[in-house]
Image (cartoon, rainbow, N blue to C red):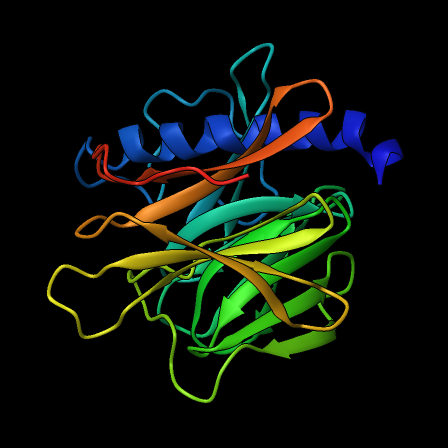
Length: 235
């Protein structure tokens, strides 16, 4: 996994910068349609970027390298196997972008609500109670873990995954509850078994991130997406 990181970081930087360029461009009012996939432009200033697009920006010059059409509502972005992926909200697809060609391929997956990468594969929370492992290079499903018989998450209601420390981590809400209390689940990727649960705060949509409090001590932090302080961490 580690040998991919230097090149992956550069690709990711291009696209994270691009997200903000896209948001700024969309506020400038009507303009010309975005260029074809892979068509370079001279500058990001004045470039009209439609909502269904990813923009690739050179991190040194700030120049737009490509405007790439993806799904109708790209919500999340990650990198796996040196490919760039977007989760397209509400249409049941992911988009796989090949940085060598700046072209996107649609991958049907179901109602996806969250995704994360381990560097090589994607892990996607999908269809209410499944975690799908997707080959980061090809888009093929390598494994599917069913977490329960009933729906555990829904669009915009938790289901945020992370991978690290030999485990899958997932925020799981109590669907139908007024203040939406949540738990953080630790899942064994080999067996699909939930090995630990920790309560999180109610009334907030909690996302998660992985890090280390100090050398040799991995930790998982669950933080509110809307700025609240009532989500807690777990080791």
